[in-house]
View 1: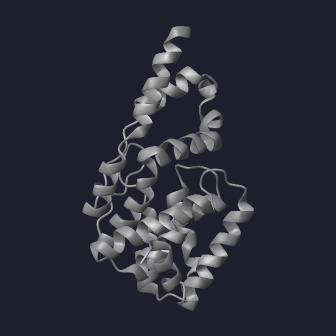
View 2: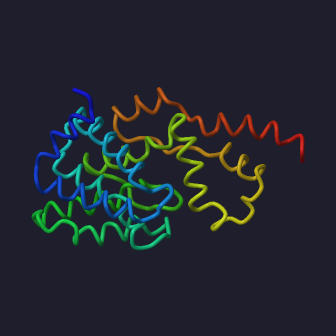
Length: 211
């Protein structure tokens, strides 16, 4: 069964379907360029692909991945969206029991993994699946497209020096994608590769002629 058909099967559950529709509606109206429904939908598909193979609790994974970027609906600051999303998700999950809401919130809080900017390491299987589902967007040619779109959303606002193609290419050519947490995601990531470094390293070679 294709993954999008598996999603349709999950959405037969009324509360998940309602959550899915509400989130889609809010994101479609948000005007977000990078963290929009196009991105979230692929993350949902990634989460099903990874979560089912790994044996994760999809009752936690699916609402978490649907809501993982809702922080951007409240505040455009990417460094805070995981914390805001973990706090605000309670308002979206009235039909879920408290114990599950806490698990979902934890998945949202940890979905960026641990890096220089984010300090929450995924520990449970469900947290790792949600993190990996989002992380796969940075691999392969999809990663190149997603990286450019993220730059359009945040680039010149946060870093005025990025008006230069040279500086953009230099930054992306040095970009190291975080390692995945699950075996399933690792296999997909290895197959796709870090195309961001590859593509922008070539661009940097051409732009060196103008420096």
